Image (cartoon, rainbow, N blue to C red):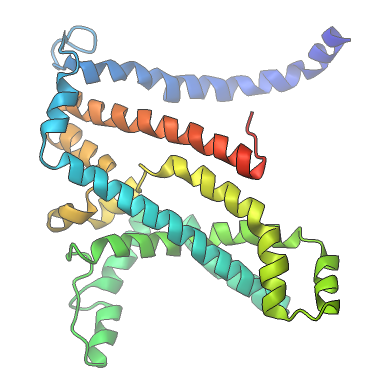
Length: 299
């Protein structure tokens, strides 16, 4: 019986081969380069001919004055994105759920989901035009009501909030749809029972809607823990400048400058390996919490 089943499923397994080959080539193959983190890498000697220096690259990174600030920026920006990316989609989903005109509801859903399809190269160009201190729409509106213009992309105090706000603008449409799907799965009889008990819209939301959404909220929140060290390279790289390094520089952009700009490949690989190891443990923790709190299992 088992052999017969294997023969029946053989075409399905064969269909996986192209995908597995691509994963081996582009995901696991480059991992050989991790040895550079423990080498004094030299172009002429190559990957396996360069001299080994043990943990010297890690010690050097730790001794750099900017390292701890970069780690702090990465964590702060990521946590703010996670919190904002949780609150705004939930509130938006609850508001859309109250709409009764389906055409208007679907139009709003489409409009808030559209930025998700745009790359950060395009969105950063739009943001630069909107936030420009000279000709930007936002600063023009502020000046028209007597407020002082702000250089949002050149002020270290404002820059992290610009990153968080623009990330919410781009990504919250997708999360909103996920929460709307969770709302659609709530049993309508619960609302009917709440109405019979005299509950208004607010009490229905508090005692029926939010508890019904709680499993997916817990699930998405716990899974997002694995992204704490991923503050968004594409976004930051397209928006930041040297004047905002103090609050906007993150691990990914730090690795880019050390490795590709300064040519210190061993040091850059050490930073990347450090980030990958910490992210691996955070992802494992997130899956454990997702299983314990939301009964979610990936394996």
